[in-house]
Structure formats: C-alpha cells, structure tokens
Image 1 (cartoon, rainbow, N blue to C red):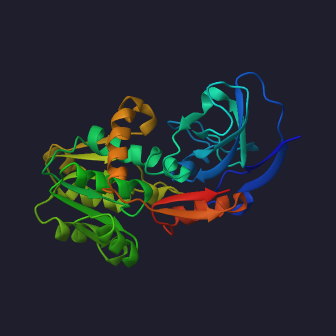
Image 2: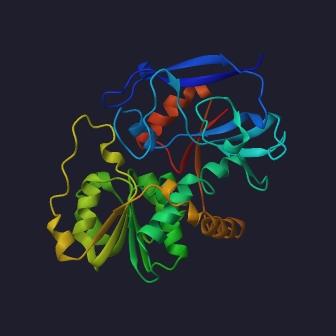
Length: 332
C-alpha cells in the first residue's frame, strides 16, 4: 500500500515555533477514486503567512487544525492518475504541501509546463512573484517615474517587487535588508538603485538619506518601524501596499502602531492591505510579464533550498529569522 510522510501541527506556538509544536507521521493512502491523482512532490514552499495559520485566530484563511497535516504550496509529478486531464508524468502545482506524496481530486492540481525548473513555479512563476506583481501594480498602482521603497528586499516577494518596479519604469527603487551581504545582493543582483541594512541604525534616517526627495510607493513586507519610516517619507498622494508584517509575527504581545499616523491625513496617503488569493483575475497579466522577463533574462531569482521533509520546520524557521535569500524551498 502506498504511503505518505506528512508534517502535522500538534500545538499552537507561543512566540517562536519550536520543534515540539510539530510531528512527522506516515499514513497509508487509499486507492484512487474517479478523477483523482497521486503526486510525488519535488519541492515544498515555506512562507511567512504560515506562521499566522499556526494561531487559532480569525484571518483571511483558516488556521491549521491541530493533529492534522499542514498545507502549503508544492510542485511535483503525477505518479498515478484516473484523470484524463492530469495524466501520469505531468508536472503540477497544488496546495497540499508539508508531505512527500499528495493525493486528491484532479481539480486541486494545476498542470504546468516543463520548460522551466519545477522550483520556479513556487517562486518566480508562483505565488510569491504574483504577490509582488499584484501588490505593486494593482494595489499600489505604481506609475512610471515614481520612487519605490521595498522592505524585505532580499526575500522571495521583496526581490520580485523591486525588480518589477524597475522593469515597469520606476525612477528609483530602494530596498532594505538584514545584512551587508543581502544589501549587496539587492543592489548588484536585483538592480535596486539603493539599499540599506536596517540593523545598521534608524530606519527612517537611512530611508530619508536614500530618498531625499521622498518616496511615492511603499511595498511593505515587514511592518513595524519600517512602516512608520515609510509613512514619514511618502510624498503627497503616496500609496502603500501592505503585504506582510513579518517583524511582529512571532511577538507574544501586539506591536504598537505607527506613531505618525496623522501624516496619512496630512499627505493624503492610501494604505491598502491585500492577499493575492483575492485577485485571480490578474494572473494572466502576471504570467505574460514574468515569462517574457524570465525568457529574456531581465529578471533574477534566487532560491534557498533545504533538503528533506525532516528539515521542513528548520527551513521555515530559517526563513522567518531572515537567514535565507530569495524563495525558501524544501526539496524532497
């Protein structure tokens, strides 16, 4: 009988997750029913939003259930199928991550082309880059000639947001990152015009030095003092795409809000939160842009790959601590 090894959440984390909050189990898989597939996963995605799902709190997506296998983005190949539309050998993406073998109705799996490495469908052609594209162009409505600031600029979403801003005609793109090596990568590999290490000193002062004439758009992956600094630097009618607030995801007490919110009124600013799952209508435009940029070498993408399902929690925690660059993946 085929089996699947899976990672389950067994306890709600208090602050930073620890290995004891999870367990690994091996389950027997039933025979396929009509129009179902079995997939050997090649890569799993770990993402910051997963930390929120470990809490028992209302959000845009249901929390992970205790004593149940966690889900998340994954890509693999079909090894058994009763579906004419999703045949054996097809490369597919799906949301049944945190397991080495996934099985379910064929409608849950999307067939993808084989012209790029499978891992690309979780990053540069996956949810992270799609999030950057939607946030920058639809939520923040960036226009050519504007100055853009991206926090978490060495991460999976941030590195894409900055490059998309450049490719769409921003006059200046500024990023923040958490180490000198990451700052160098943001400038030299991703093509940002300026970048700074937020650990080096006051974020507002560093941002103002990089953008003496202010910024027009802020793509926020971090929240906290980064958001406060951006509000203090945004020009009249500036816009903020609120994508994430990773600086506070593991805090046991809620962070205080920005102290300069009156400036939102004074400057006529727009702050809009979003999650990409509510914007599927923009996916075709994203794919058209990204395939052109990838095929012509106009966009750079990096992956931090950690091997083994038994290291999936380690990969997640490394990503949350800022120890990874680009898209963080678990290879099976």
